[in-house]
Length: 168
Image: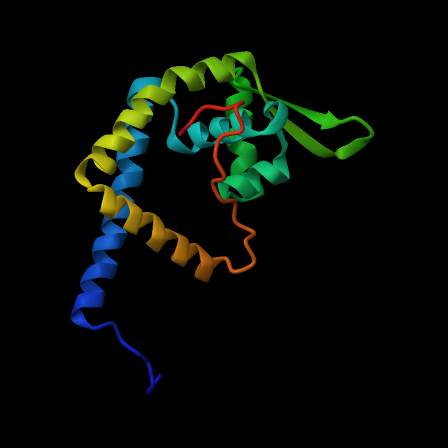
């Protein structure tokens, strides 16, 4: 540990500011969605992922990967979403081991109703306070971080809407 490169004062301030901002951002988005739509942010993200998938369906493994979620956490969320009629889970024909999660018409309706308030909150807490140059810098910084944290590109990247889903 003698050669540890400790954070200098500026780096320490940047690091802690970044952590606080990410924490508060997640909390703000979750509170808005719960208040206006009754959905936790994690459930909203699951509905978005399914809405953007071909046919509105993904295997549970694919969905867990897109959400960066553990299978057990996703299973709990999927049970709740299915109980609320927002998704339907079923076994793939000829493959009893693979479970498919599919967005229901009710799930798409709930997502479409929740999206405007969510987008308003994202704009309010992030984009409205930044210049276009800062938005571009934030994207570039995030892309560099993703490249360092996920050099093989396993983590899902936003590639644009495929026309089937709701824009987040």
